[in-house]
Length: 99
Ligand code: HEC
Image 1 (cartoon, rainbow, N blue to C red):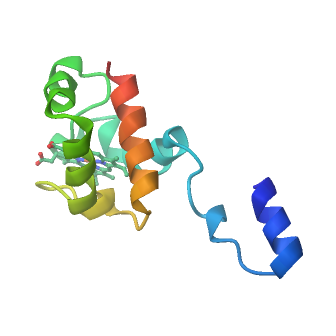
Image 2: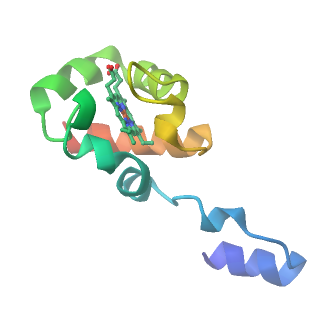
Image 3: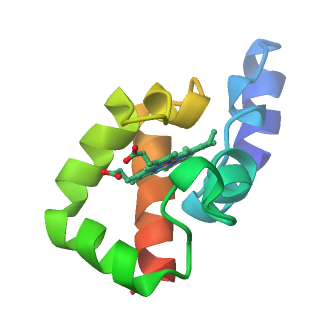
């Protein structure tokens, strides 16, 4: 946000970062929790350590890839238009929650 104000001052440009979650937690809450907090449609539910244990065992690289490409009933990028780095941060956050 501070960066955003600075950028506005310099360039009077639109600041797309406003729309973008600034960290993994924000990303998770904004874009992933709607399905992953409850396990709707078979989404691996945060807090289900058995299921996440298997996912974590596949390695983060694989989870990043599935998130970006989409997997089963989950749309590519979890249905967002966020850049890879934001999606990776969201995956990292979910992995942290499920360790
Ligand atoms: C509309 C509901 C929905 C949203 C929103 C959603 N997911 Fe998912 N996600 C799913 C479902 C359903 C699966 C299980 C897919 C399958 O295996 O068939 C899944 C699976 C996953 C997996 C495990 C992949 C695997 O091999 O099973 C990861 C990692 C994941 N989602 C990350 C994310 C992240 C990060 C976000 C937010 C950017 C997100 N998801 C948003 C529904 C969702």
